[in-house]
Length: 434
Ligand code: 5CA
Image 1: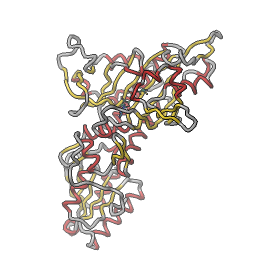
Image 2: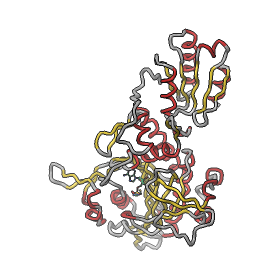
Image 3: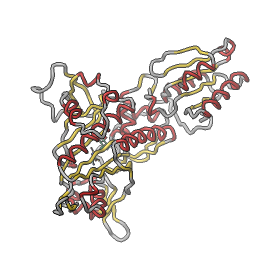
Image 4: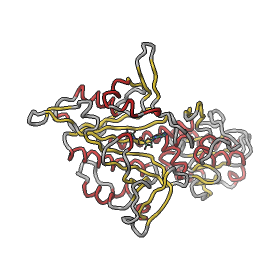
């Protein structure tokens, strides 16, 4: 992408309405634009990151055996009357009446709809287990939408739903998702710690919130210091084993939200911090399958009401949470797996023929090798270019200037550490393509 053509409306000033750093930086970096309270348009830079995050979520769901589908945002109120949640959800649900006076709603979650779809088609234990997910916009009419994407009204969620014949099967599905969540966040370059949690309006008796530690988190959390050192990806077992040993080991390391914290059970080496909830998993048995009659024929021909769980990741909140956990005074520091571009080329003097020739050549070769590269070909002061690059947080910056070229070098800078390397063009290329 050429920066001269890219729709990237960065702001010099800090927007007064933004209270937390992720909201400020997303506005300043031209990632999002608020269109109504708690509702945002995703501009090209933000959209690239949102898709990166969604893709990692998708790959880990697929790896765990879940199958992707897509349910609509607009739902009929009838289903919610069957489960008993239509009244219970209260004002947080956006209710809509269509031209035929039918009651509709913008879905805040999908337990009812998926249970209805499931029971229409699945009639036998032989078709179990099943685990279905989608990545879809949700709407919750939060009293106080705030902190930008962290607590929006419209937000992107990955939600999936497991169906099993018995409790043992449902608990295995839960452990599989527990592992998938640990892997998902680790792959994004962030540490999300599973904490025993309250089940709230979703219901059930087994639940974990996945929490990222960050100063601006909405809740107080407590965990054993060992959590900070765990290397989940190195230790993760294969998803097709029974995962009992793994689940017991991980859940035995202390971690709790404020509501569940018990000082008497906490370890000596306790970390107290603020946390952001990026995911939440629930096992709730027959809470929806019973009232909605999701029943299959069991092995002995007798009817069995299925066991269910649901599992959510706030995909759009994750984008903000990553920024909360990874930024400095100058701007965002994207972990490479979710970065909008891997590398930026900064042309210090676009009217210098040699500078531009080298930059164009680099740009063509990197693009040809499918490296996602942003080329700053604008006629701007070097200071303004560096400030923009640090603000939008691309992991590697390759600076090409007339003085360096005379000495045969370009400068490669790593955004995360500020380290700078003077390298020949070929060595710089080899380094970023590795
Ligand atoms: N049906 C279940 C799981 S599929 C469910 O809805 N769970 S939830 O209510 O905990 O939401 C799942 C995730 O969505 C949360 O962990 C959080 O990361 C995200 N989320 C919830 N509300 C908002 C909001 N207002 N703005 C942004 N993200 C949100």
